[in-house]
Image (cartoon, rainbow, N blue to C red; front, top):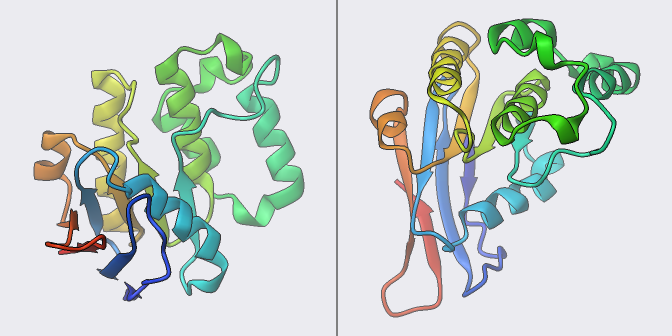
Length: 197
């Protein structure tokens, strides 16, 4: 079990955050809250602290996939394999699973919004980790790719005991895949926030 708690030093846009999360292996957790309340900021904070947290972590962020231009996902993977071979796993499986093979050589700036999102998902999930933090992973995905991602999350938690912490507003995802929801809400009468069950 991974405990993330009492992180009162996190400075949010409107105040400080109290946090109590207990993450078990092989579970999918959602973070839910109003737009602009600080969910993505919390992920950014976790990323800065990831080296201090006992579990290996991988992050899917909303930022643009870099580098852009004439560089393809094939090139990005080639560079990553040369520098971080030991940190990558299942990348060929993920490319096949999400039917991305025909797009590997296409320059990033010629990919659609959904294809760029899928490329980011593949790179995130290919990193060897115990906890995957996914910020709105279903953005721009068509129905088929959404279904594949649902399937992957269910299989990875069941067969590989991977855990996922997901920011998303998708009702179907929350009802069909998630084991527990953590709510991000403002504390009554204060400038502080609470993130927990």
